[in-house]
Figure 1 (cartoon, helix red, strand yellow):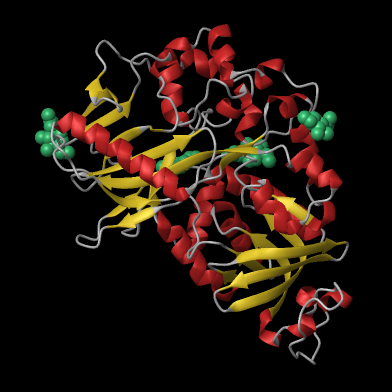
Figure 2 (cartoon, helix red, strand yellow):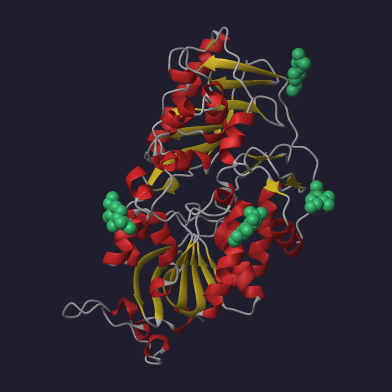
Length: 459
Ligand SMILES: *[C@@H]1O[C@H](CO)[C@@H](O)[C@H](O)[C@H]1NC(C)=O
Ligand SMILES: *[C@@H]1O[C@H](CO)[C@@H](O)[C@H](O)[C@H]1NC(C)=O
Ligand SMILES: *[C@@H]1O[C@H](CO)[C@@H](O)[C@H](O)[C@H]1NC(C)=O
Ligand SMILES: *[C@@H]1O[C@H](CO)[C@@H](O)[C@H](O)[C@H]1NC(C)=O
């Protein structure tokens, strides 16, 4: 097949002769820079790594293209250089399901069912803009009536395959949903789980985030036991995958046809050409991320509707605050006391005194430097106000999970665009399995485990 032909005359032909680009011509690459695989996987987070391990174990060849210098995506572990203490500030726990435990066993990752360690002995609801605690504010944790509504849609725990006509509750605003089902008292507590500007979002986009598994209904959690924290999953996975992972690498252009895909990948050791029979995209399906893959009209009519939020998790060192206090950001004068985005959701004490975990969130993406500056300024204003002195908070870690949670707006949910996306699976030998499908590592591993037989069937 022409696509997989590797010319032995691998001399450097200068690109773009008469508009013809040689970047997809294998003969213009050194032999070692042309990689032929069954499946190319874009993104080495929870989904991409799981897919790579599973496909490898089925005897298939894979290559993972990961933009960061390590695998793991939203699994973020900070290791304190002084004490070796590990603090997970991204993914925390995993649902105890056979998909998760089999995967951990495969990778030699130890786990148990012990509760997550807590370093909090008091919670103060504080207006982060003034540092003032809210008086007379006690949020309700009575999730019962909310769970009753969630139980109407148990399938949302693993799929969003919604064809028109869609239940109007799902594409109406979550603010209206709260009122319609008298759930106003738990609005703040739902927000604490979602860390989004949730009231204007379609209900689907909130309840598929703060759903039954997030609230621990019907499931129990397991925790990874390792001095490397949750990152041990990805350290061990990399040991298995080795050269099948291209770290600090991105796809710069692609050609997809009935034979498969050709991807030009920029790597720290130069450009590589990947020929793959199937392509699995696990990165957020935003216009920018998908641009190199040159979508056709049909793909665009579905994928172009995705919108995303901004989310930045981190660890901050603050001196002078009382030990063991979690500060939750609450606004004194907004509806349900929800802080106005961009905002920090809370500051949670960790295993190291004076080190707090937090999430910064915004209704839409923001450049990294801007988000970082805003976060630092906002934490300093808070800490100065609480301590009454000028503090010097230090951002120990500031990660970007932006674009966060790609999802469809109301109109697209209403007319069944989700169903169209599921129907798109496999079209042009391309598959999608990122966080847009379902939230949470374990749910994604579960979804991916059902997608892999379909991908394998096309090899
Ligand atoms: C996970 O759940 C199973 C039952 O499904 C139980 O036997 C096992 O002890 C649980 N594992 C942990 C670590 O809690
Ligand atoms: C709260 O916990 C911290 C350590 O996490 C401890 O130093 C402090 O004494 C505790 N305060 C109370 C009131 O229990
Ligand atoms: C749904 O609406 C969008 C515009 O909001 C349109 O682009 C898309 O083709 C429609 N899809 C279906 C299945 O009708
Ligand atoms: C895994 O996905 C299947 C559908 O593909 C679903 O029936 C099952 O409940 C899911 N399991 C979990 C733990 O989400």
